Image (cartoon, rainbow, N blue to C red; front, side):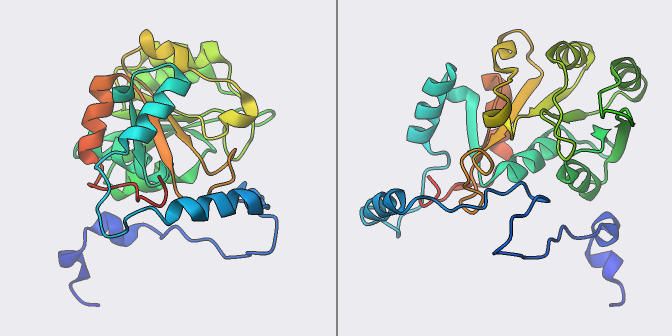
Length: 252
């Protein structure tokens, strides 16, 4: 198409679309997807609840009852929790909130591809710090020196990391949070498997953000529920980026 560059940003045209082939009957290690559906009894209870949901009404901008229940489970206040249609949407919102023209997104390499894709779509420069080739460990000194040199707008670190599956030492992550002058997002998508979290450190570090999902440990990839936990000032401003009614009444 002629003149496409005048209608669509060049960074969007240049970026490859996120695509995956569908293999519904197979165990898909590339998505770390639970191969088993919900138990029939649980589905029946869910269907009974759906009968009482008014489909014609918009949901609240944020699911307040769900936020309160999650906050109680996590031991934080409800204004520190924000939900979205999957953690991918939250990652996008975090980049939108922190990005400026010509900004920088910093990540380990390899890691979850969405950080890079969304950063590039915003026109940000992606700063990669290679993990150790032998055991995929995080090179702390190199990472911190890169933070100091590059001064990124936001840092994403998945812990456990995907696709390598290894945990990074808590003291390494906290040192990065301490040294960085930007948001440091620790993606705990696999927390239910590792049981390792930086949640208690939110009280000490205002630039720390934790992102989680219901897709992995709860096997709810098709339902699309993700959330972040952060200082309330951070959470409330990220909520401004999320589109209204970001979580449907069915997901909630």
